[in-house]
Image (cartoon, rainbow, N blue to C red):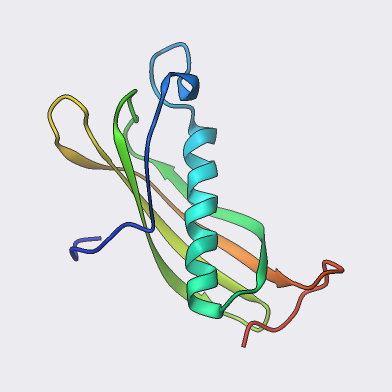
Length: 123
């Protein structure tokens, strides 16, 4: 995302998030993607309860290292009758060089549900 704007979510990754190679587990990144995408869904469609139904086109471009500051930027791609699709772009600012690189991106689909877990209209 080339436009200067605030990230939806920003985290610093810690030793508990690393694998034996010293890089951050992909599942940790995916967890943050899910959180950021859900924030975007609520921002776009209101205070509904959203459940994740799909992570699509998850691409890991570069590794994330211990101490990197990870920023997740979101946008709404599509709003359906009961669903919303968000795009999440993940950038890491390297702890040592302060260089910022795109590390991951994904599209996430959420469905709004009621208290009985039945889909409800988002608009």
